Length: 187
Image (cartoon, rainbow, N blue to C red; front, side, top):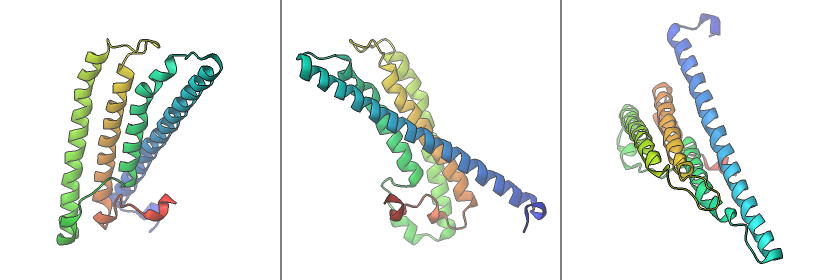
């Protein structure tokens, strides 16, 4: 059926699917950028520390603080990427017992719970940032707020992933195919 002859329901589904793909693409792109940037910056700073220490027998100081600031960003971006690709550990014992409709209901409920949990954790994380805002790393003077901000950003990414997964589950003909891990994509 052509786009001109599509029913309003089909048009809405197409719009929802397009929006979900765009949001998921943005989440993946941001997560990949954060992971690469964090890893690259940690490597460069620690390499600079090694080179300076080798030639001068003294350290720069600030590179030793970089993993404390950047490692949470690397970890949370990896967690969000794993959620986007369906690569988290899953217990699927009930899925074999439930039919297509039962799996859809179970997985939709799961996504509501996941989204609520991670958006709540992000909200609570704002209080943590207020508390840690006065803590500074001694050499760089950067506040611990930047490290804890990674948790909040990651929680929001996981919450948004749960919401896009919810929409995918509503639109999918087979709920078990949504975000299912395909080993051949790992190569």
